Length: 122
Image 1 (cartoon, rainbow, N blue to C red):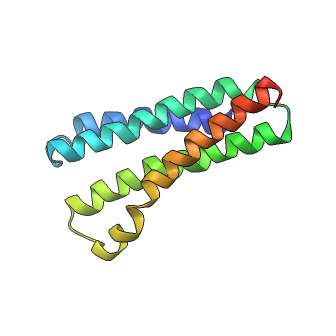
Image 2 (cartoon, helix red, strand yellow; image 1 turned 135 degrees about the horizontal axis):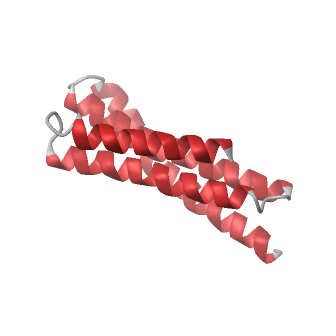
């Protein structure tokens, strides 16, 4: 529950920063990417808050840990890439960070699928 609430706070904060402070600095494409990362923080935070109340098995908890890690990789990598590209720093690091975005997405999806399977009784 705590991490879900932190994701909600971070998603709202990053969304506000993007809409107000970064709007003058980022290109429209980068601003859209920033908004996507913020939205996923909000969505996964809400999901984690709800799911954490229904998670009692170890496998279900592990599934939510995958969602947490995936959200950090997905949203964090997008935001890092946006900032690094905007300030033209870390070109070699960006090549490493780029593949983390789809990996994070797969972890989020996989975590939710395993969590649902556990709730089904599988």
